[in-house]
Image 1 (cartoon, rainbow, N blue to C red):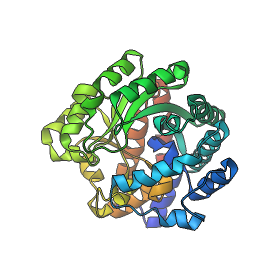
Image 2: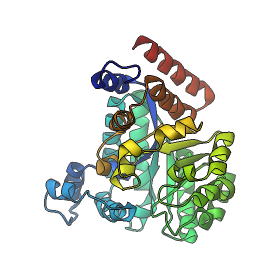
Image 3: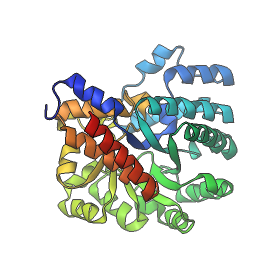
Length: 342
């Protein structure tokens, strides 16, 4: 256990280590207890009769199994207050994990298709982010397009988001990956880039390395979400390293969705050894069994990560963020001070 006397010592080090979270779907932080409470508040009929029944349904064989229940869970999110409560609950947990900065995904098409106004969605999320900022947790908000829907639908969603553009920092691409390549969304991402928005995309989780190439060359991403399968292509790894792009890796998600069958075989260390700027994130923590520190600890235990590897992952989370360089530098200094004192 390089650099640590025991697992408890490593866990304590991770617990207080300053970090950012760059891959978090706010709808995926909907805990069963809140889902049940919001269903009662909004008079929404669920397919489950108890919190326990919801938890029992959180067993997935693949990404699509998860998405099926994920979209069901969204049905309880109706009012601005619902979105505020959801986001505030996540931010409280993130702060407890020593997360100092978050870059949050949201899926407006999953809500507007149900008749929920865009203003309710963005208004509630943004209000919670603003309150957290007053407590020292900074944030960026990233609007994701659902890739199983059409590009025309994505364009209409971007149209609907234009009045809220000052609150949105970037756009992303999520949902069912296989069969929905990044190039399907070339025009809407070009438009978003022209609007000054940052570009990210899920690529190489279940989809092939070619999808990562498309994210780079067609969408011109500023960051890659997941990216596991990039390791299958040495030229692709070299390209990502040369471009200095960050990968937002989600260990417990990868395990829960059977992207890896055992965390001891997770590619995180190989990513670092290849020079990739990997980070650790929770993805959809209510569904996948843990927030960011749980992900750090699970993968650190499974791979026996060293103190320096853990610190590198934390550094990468800030240098891979969309914070200004001066703010990144302040966070990096805080990491160095923490590491020196522990």
